[in-house]
Image 1 (cartoon, each protein chain N blue to C red):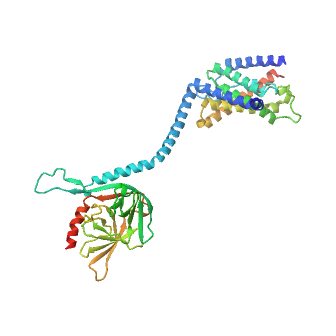
Image 2 (image 1 turned 30 degrees about the horizontal axis):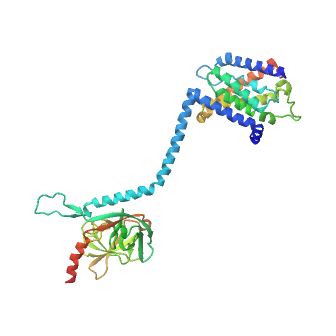
Image 3 (image 1 turned 60 degrees about the horizontal axis):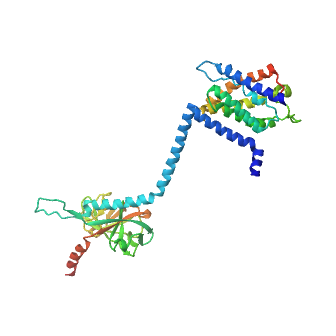
Length: 276
Length: 173
């Protein structure tokens, strides 16, 4: 209390000045039409700006949730694609009601570890056995293919990246459906090679390469990349094609795991042939 | 002592009356050029005795401005300017302190300290008062140069009357 009195004795003028100026400003705003409207429009601008900034900040905090829900929604949308469905239409019947049924199921996942600079590049994702992930499922993202699941644990899966020199993916040229198999030579993380395309195929630089319909792993029509250069080795009957990947594997974040629920049936049938 | 208080009360009443009845009706430049106004009532704060307590002069400034505001129908605008002026008065006085110091019983008038000293003293206070007044009146610095123009034009014409007051009445307290 004594200190308070001392403070007032020493700085009484300043304190009184601030008090009376506050009172004056209150009177000015309260009883003068012009100053009142200026005051309220200015404070509106100020509070509006503040609220905007606050909203932006809060939205930033929720960004992770938003991204997750968007990724799940994308997975559902992928399932709606015709290429992700099995066509049950039977041509002897002219009725073709609801003959597409789900063949590929998509599940979103987040990349938690990734490498691109080795011979055997792997990606770790945060979905595993508990989420229904099993080896040899495909992994894609919005820009193209990413790899194939190699092994799983309870909550994580190890994905063999496209940039793994044992990965083989069946790929086709979109324009004319000639197909080959995609391999990586282990040097440039931006380029892969497409082999086994027959010499008589007609190629143009810039042709789109996508997954073929023969793969049991990926649905048809997932983007892989574009033809950069192509040549024929002397004495070979097949093209060597250099494909520039459409997605950037060095900054993966959200991916989708693709499950072909009819794969078992297809492989079983194909194994019968191999056994012969 | 008592005569000082009495004289200040009379000065207060007279300055308010002159300001409200005469100068508030003078509209220099007509309706389209409303830039120069005459403010004579700040003389009251300028001429308070030097020994007046800081808090007391601020309170008197508020009272004066509030009274003027009632007649100008602009509650708070003159009062804030007067409070500001009363607040800075001791700092201006100490900045202009003569070599021998002040005789604190005196009022800062022309007859005690001479014309040049009084001109500087009243000029600083008047300019501060007017600038504060026009800023609060506009209530935004968006029209800064307009505020400046009003302040300068009003300053010259008001300063003329403030000095005239000294010559006409030659106040000593």
